[in-house]
Image (cartoon, rainbow, N blue to C red; front, side, top):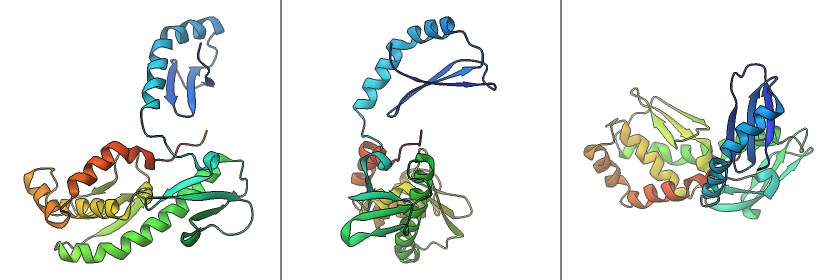
Amino acid sequence: MFEYQLKPSNRRRSIAIKVTEAGVVVHTPMGVSTHQLHSWLLSKQSWVLAQQKKLQTLPQLQVPWVSSKVRIFGEVYECHFHSTGESEVIHNKQTVNVCVRQPSNTAECRKALLSLLQSELERYVMSVLPTLAKNMGVCIASVKFREYKSRWGSCSSNKALTFNTLLVGAHKAAIEYVIIHELAHCHVLAHNHAFWQIVSRYCSDYQENVKWFRVSGRSLFISKAQ
């Protein structure tokens, strides 16, 4: 039998299982018998092993509070969590210092780190976005930054742009491609031929960036705190 973390809940009505890099988590309703749970898990063992094997072939998620490393603009920085001092990114030393009340609290560490990374990404994006928008003939309604689970950016029909905070780990050329991609959506919302023509006009190697995000983009994501 595989190892797992058990999480019973009064709100659950059925057993569920989740396989991640951090391990296997089993969610159950309160009061499930040990025998019933064991039988159910045995029936899922082959599936769990297959999922674990699949995860081994994928780019690993970042776990900065374990590895003491985090990606910023395509480089690997040392990442340290402290209970004193200031949160800062020191680029010339490729070091990130994150101030939290409890460095042992991974949820707190993750939240504070994402806040710091968002500031870094916002600073860079806003340094290049106005020029790109002007060149592409786009008048932007608003720009926001947030963590997405499965997309790098978005553009609404009223030209409001949103960028994934975790883009900060990509090379700047890849970030600029995402900016151009979303600005192109201000002209054409669909991913059709006209859209890609606009993208290629301002990012001639866009196909390389598309491939990079498809193959390696997962390595920019930061593991959820357990």
